[in-house]
Length: 330
Ligand code: NDP
Image 1: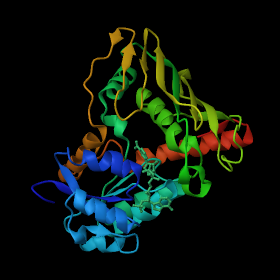
Image 2: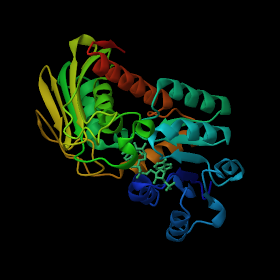
Image 3: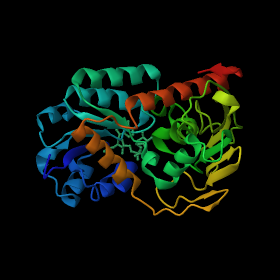
């Protein structure tokens, strides 16, 4: 803690930490960049200079557990490849730190359970990096859907795909799966936060592999259909070879569309009543500030570990349905 702000240490200085989280931490009001954990001595040197960090605020994966002694670090933010989230969240909790973990929270529900248990045991809070809960267009979509502004929601279409993926994202052992784990998770989130309801069952189909050698062991694209309570259906797609970024909701007396829906900036929304008019915000700054306030005030995070676990449970059911060709109950 410094000047009333909680210190955050970023674990893994890849593109999300470098491009989004560290810049956002220059804008936050309730937290600041207090430490880094990296396997690269070059990055450590560059970050130290760029963000004016003291030498003792830089850790490697080997020295990470010493963060326990670092009173400047209140929150550890795990920004590593998906399959490494569980280990570092558990180690962070054991070091007595509150934790933010990037999405997907982990690659299995069992890992999520271990992460939640470790934080509970340490008496520390856990949240997941779901930035869209703090984005005004998505928040308005939540309000319209959950408060039934246009009547009951009947139909949801959610698409999120990238035109390319590289590195650990193509390795099942590190990613836990393909585009579903990486960006399809936003469609699962959207269906849940639009309705405030939980999907009960799912069917899923793997898309054609144009590059089987590249997408070895993971899907190149996937389509799935979630059955929600009250007859609501959510039809979703995700891909690593086609850009997709849209959310459409049809309700009894109206509709809403966000396109793009999930980007860091430039989100646009329209409803049956016209264009949404909201300022652009720094989603990551709002998300980290919200968690810092939750920690300070001892109130629960809206994007808790349990929330992250529920998505992982649904993702696993989607893969079950895809592999068996049968309807999977969640
Ligand atoms: P990158 O590949 O850009 O960075 C990952 C970093 O993790 C690396 O730079 C490296 O940092 C560290 N690392 C440690 N072990 C390994 C390993 N075995 N293989 C590869 N990297 C390793 O990934 P991203 O930053 O894009 O993604 C990181 C996490 O953030 C993922 O879980 C992803 O889903 C999530 N994410 C969330 C977003 C959001 O909008 N909420 C957006 C983008 C990503 P170092 O060199 O410092 O050790």
